[in-house]
Image (cartoon, rainbow over the protein chains, first blue to last red):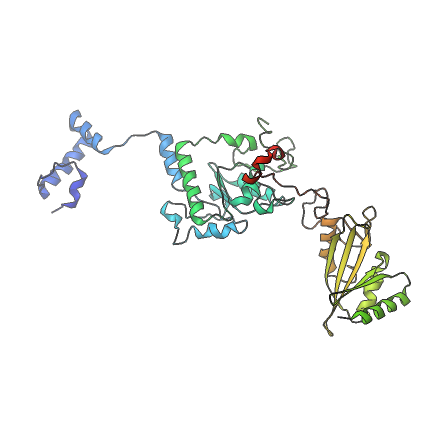
Length: 231
Length: 169
């Protein structure tokens, strides 16, 4: 008896479906899809089985549930970042466990640690190399507000690239980073618009190579946030 | 360690080689220090190498602000056989921070003199490759000087809120 398969159709409670009945239902369903059956039956069938949504929502749902972070550690926060793929926090539950080895294959950049002035152009270049759509998480105090290294050598991430989510902590626990990633997931599902990128000219996937074309080259040190609108 | 007497004997020997070489000695907490004239640092270190101090362990930069002359360079020497350490110090003014490089004789000084140049702005004459080592090449200023602004992002902490937010602007 195919008792467990009865859930495929809406069956009133207490109905006893034999194997033969079940086969009849299957054949009717096939006929309905061929257009052999009437509108009323077809409408009922579709109503029971099909969910409608917009394409944007479906795409955002798919994107938000399979973020590929870049394999990119900057400092001590990277140790906490590595542990989110471990058994205890296990980010694989949400589909973010595939750390990609190249920025071309990744769509999430986790800035896990302090960024020195010398490192900032490298980080920006990695961000520019990532394919659209792409997101960035500033993890820990250093990449958001420079933290305990608040001195001449360090630069906060917001100065040279757009950041979608800031995760506070020094370092944040893996749970906090996971919370940040889930916040980002919610953001991608609810509002995929990335308006805050305008201030950093962070569109497309082309690299900005200073010197090649001075008109479009961005000097992250000379630029104040928001000053590059429409450049 | 040379004791106090041994330090004075060493200083006297250096003075016999060059009357102006040693400006003073310092013996503090079992640590012997020779204070030398910047112009004679190469000859002084070579003389000490002949005395057995064959290893230059490190070179340091110091900013003595507000004392004058402001900038200082410390050379830490080690006698490997006697396990004997000696510090050689020199001071240079801010408006003429030139020190002869000891890199041709002591290759360990290469990166450390570059770091002192980077952080304090001491110019080592005769260094084979004197350029910044830690900060970006187009960086302006020498960040470890005492009068260099701390820099960074102004962060408003809750305890400072009573004093206003003006300094974060």
